[in-house]
Amino acid sequence: MGYEELYESSWNLYKMELMVGSIGSMLMGELISEYLDRGYYLLKLNGGTNYASARFDRGEKDRIRLEMKMHPTSLGSLFAFGGICHITIYKGVQKDISGFLGGQVKEVMSSVGDPEPGVYMVNQDGTSYFVGTTIYLNMKEHMDLNTFRIDPKGIISKLDDVLDEISTMDRSLEVGQ
Image (cartoon, rainbow, N blue to C red; front, top):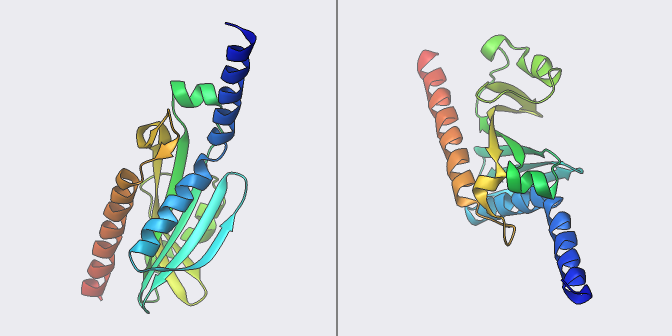
């Protein structure tokens, strides 16, 4: 390998390393685009190095919150094992559910670090109540490692499944009252 090939190869690896650090931002951008295309309004967006959250509203009764954390990974680890991302998706419910699941779920869950998948949480944001749960994803399964292009369709499908389950829970709470 001559100097020019080494130089080009080095620059390609350098750019790929930069892209690895941007996977979380790229994913959140894809999720925001999807929900905007579905007619939601982006009301709030927060973020940090490996964390982002967004709140969407559509009409007066349709609310969603997303909290995403992308665990730091290296280029080699991404190719060998993948990159772990977890997304907590909350759906707004239209009733006071402060007593649901014991009432202290928010405080208890906020003290345990990363949320466990499949554990439902109740959270209050102003006058709105949200029920949510977390899914863990291996980003290697949802992106092209040659171009670093994320395919959000599979991720959106998983989030839709969670939202459907929360809607089912919400309807069962109405029946039980």
